[in-house]
Length: 447
Image (tube, rainbow, N blue to C red; front, side, top):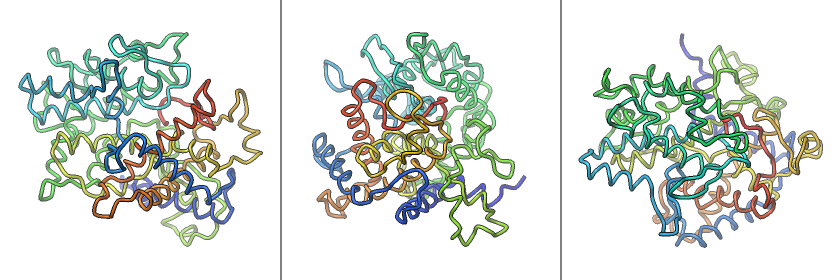
């Protein structure tokens, strides 16, 4: 079955930015449905972000790009440690090739990202060596320990891989045990995370074009890491791969990973794509009545948050260990999740309307909504657009000439950065829970 223009477009990186920008343009005209927007406060957010960059780094060029690898750079009593780099050194000392090291890290990163939706404030992970971790760091360390034990591997002598054969038979109990889940230590959406990993196994089985690898056979089942072999065949001189090729692997190769009960168009499940109230009442679109752009498609906003988080995270491995250059990374957007979005609310750029606030105050001190609620969709669209605006201001204020600005600039703003700022201001304003100013009911598959 051929895929329609609308489906292809809504799965594109271009659509994420363009649709969110349309919501932003409505905000400038005071036409948001659930938030008040104060454009004058964007500068203060950029200044706060820059203050954190200068506190923790020499300048924005010194900030590493945002990615899952950062969760494995931990502070201990004996000093800072890079847990991934430590494994790579051990593998190389055992005569594992650099290419295979890159495959292994991709295996780890893909599994670790897919289970990285919000854990909730009540869950934590106790590591025998490193101590206690919460939220995303805890999920990351737990995934690493499962990886080390061979939970994701079917190879009898190599625990350090994730492959289709092992993932397909992974049980809910395996995942609950790996994340130390008990009644007293609940993890939001634990069973759904396990299902995502089984879905990944299915995607690997079905995606031989991307994940089969040159040596894939019965003795070498499909692995995420074999995508590196596929990408090496997509390179242009000098060893440069386009972000579009990486995005194809993620958005097409992993399409069956995501729950099918969400937004569908032309019979195709779109993943992290949602109807936006503000666009639904926008009657100015030239495309709204055409046959190729039906009205319902025009009101949809794609985010593909976990897919983009995975892509940002894979870039570092592809470049650092795979020794490939990646072009077009500016097509990726900021991540519409609760730390980046929470920063905008806590600093007054966005203010939830009284009606929405009242509807969301079910219990606790902050409003709570389902992930597909119209409030959350509007919030996330504004987050994508505003992260671009903040990055523009950081670029202008950082003091570096254009020829010294680093590549993947937005990723460094996120890391240095908006995500950190959102976390710190939440901890300061709500020290008991450290929750964002708006909470999302997590099913373990979205945020």
